Length: 342
Image (cartoon, rainbow, N blue to C red; front, side, top):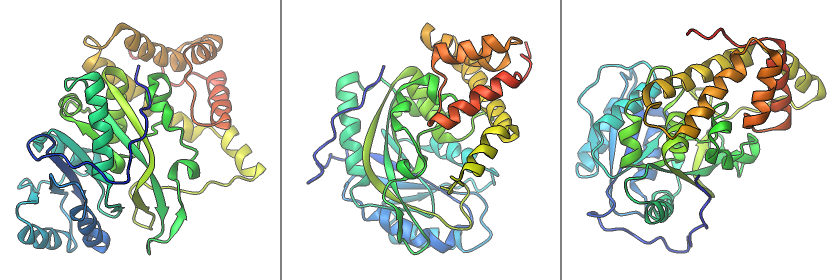
C-alpha cells in the first residue's frame, strides 16, 4: 500500500542532471489557439532544466498548428511535434498516442489552456525521486498535485480545486475508492517509465488517461500527493473537462440524490473500466487487488440488493462525500447496474 510522503522543501528546487531525470511534457492540443501561447510560455519557463515538450495535435481547424510550428522553430531542442496528424477524436486517445511516442524516464500530462506555475516540474520531480528511492525504479509511480481554479483572465476563483470540488486526494491510495471516483487531475500528474509501460495498454473502456494511470498505480505501484497547487486551472466555455459549481441548496441536493439516471450511467462506465483492468492485467495483479475488482463488479451486479449493499460496505466502495455515498447506497438498493455478461 502506498502512503503520502513528507512534503519537500520548496524554497529552492533541486535540479537534476539531464542524464538522470529527462522529462517529457505530453501536450495534447485541439483548437486551442486562444490560450495555447500562454500555456507554452509557462511550460518553457519551468525552473527544472531537463525536459522537452512532445506535442500531438488532434486535427485542429484554427490556428493551433501554426502556433505549434512557431514555437517549435523558436525552440527546436525543447519542442517536438508528432508527425502523425490523424485525428483520434478524443483527448484520451490523443494522450495515449503521446505516451506511446514518449521515450523519457518521466512523463507529465499537459492540457492546452491552463498555466503552469514555474516550479511545477521541479516540485513533482522531488517527490517522484523520493518514491523511487523508497520503492525502486521498477515500481510504477505517480505524483499529482492540487490546482488553483481561475477564470479566463487568470483571476482566482478558488485557491484549491480539491476543496472546491470536494476531492479527497488520499483516496488515490485505495483502489476500492478509486474505482468509483477519480481524484487525480491529469494536468498535474507526473508518472515514471514503469507506469507508462503499463499505461500504454489503455483500452477504450478507460474513462480518461489520468484515471487509468491512477488505477494502475493503485493496483501495481505507488502514488504521492503534493498538496500545493502547481497549475492555474482555467475555466472557460470551451473546457472539455472542467470544474463546475453544484447547486448546494436542499432542493438541489435532494434532486441529485433521488434522481439516479446519470449516476447509473456513470456506474456502468466505472464497471466497464474495472472489467477492462481485470481483462488486461488480472493475471499479473496481486490477488487482493483482483479480489477488490471482482467485488466491485459484484456490488453492482448481484441479483441480491442485500449482497450489493453488504459488498459495498465490506470493501469500502465509498466516494468523496457523505451525500455521494448515500446516493450510491440508494442506487444499489433500487436495482443492480447491469447483468453480468458472463
